[in-house]
Amino acid sequence: MASAVTLIRSSSLSDVAEYAYAATAPAGSRLIFLAGACPLNEDGSTAAVGDYAGQAAKAVENLRTALADSGASLHDVISTRVLVASSRQPDLVAAWEVVRDSFGDHDVPSTLMGVTVLGYDDQLVEIEAIAAVLDS
Image (cartoon, rainbow, N blue to C red; front, side, top):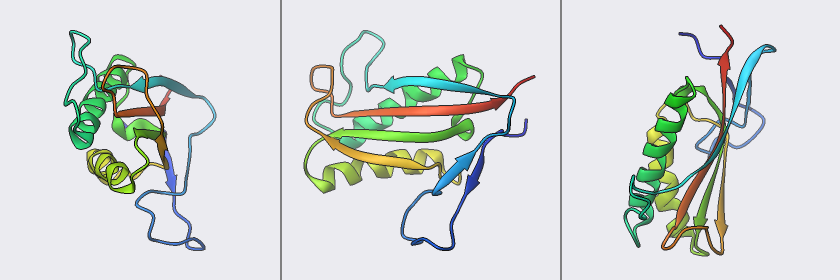
């Protein structure tokens, strides 16, 4: 099925960014606003305590599940915000690299942010996302 999302790259901006600078979805697309995907196991415990990359991987796994339950996939995501509970750039990069690699060639526009704290015990990473699918 064709994706509703069109990624936009700018030749006027730096090519250092590892994501498209913008994305669009046509009129009539169904937007899906996802709650922040947290690194929680099915029993509610926090996965990969102390491990930024491990928590990012679990958050992506949970994001994939929420998307599938909504009739979408990672290739339908139109933007993300990756929240990392750290003031250290290497911690943010560790989480970002997992998220970026999970999206593959669908280099969706993203914002990476260091925050002071997240909502669950031992939580280090959360991924917010918006997706767009063609209405059938």
